Image (cartoon, rainbow, N blue to C red):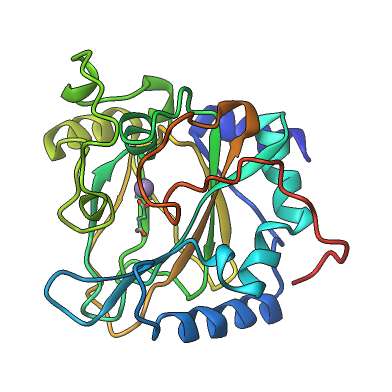
Length: 265
Ligand code: SIN
Ligand code: MN
């Protein structure tokens, strides 16, 4: 992988990943996720008090196309180049953010959940986000505060020594009423120093971002859905020892991901 990609990721906590999937591959995924979102199963989560699907988790465990996706060499090459060790898949999720109904994600750092809830020791994982729809200013793009991954975990519960692992309700980790947030006032102060950046672009756009990068997204105020797929790869050596959240949020298979032979989905 290009040195520039590693350098930008190290500096900003995120980096754009050009040419990851073809239009046909994105179309295939979109179709598959559409079918999965009609299923009623614990992995499929709805917006509060609504039948609108908010997110689908762990699809690689029950869908063959999603299983192939996590094994694509192009994605594993990126994850292993950024983490510099063999990786396994920690989490697979699709946030649908339906037109009009899709709700926000308050400011947070992903590692707050993985460390405090699951016992992940270090932020030695990486998110690869893939747009399944076009994302613009109005349909709730992911917004990041570049550079904040240098600050470590923020927020008060990290200062106390209490281990909260396994005590939270996982539903509050996937809802708009989110646990482990970065307070809005703190995010506003951070944004003054570090700036903000919104991820927008056509379907198929892909970015990698760091577990400690402060990020959020607003309600979908438009008539266009904003679905995004997130793969989190973790170093095999950084697997939490005794996670308690459901397997569709914290994969228990921590063996290095085996690449598919063909390079395409
Ligand atoms: C996330 O923070 O994990 C997802 C945010 C989003 O889908 O906008
Ligand atoms: Mn997040």
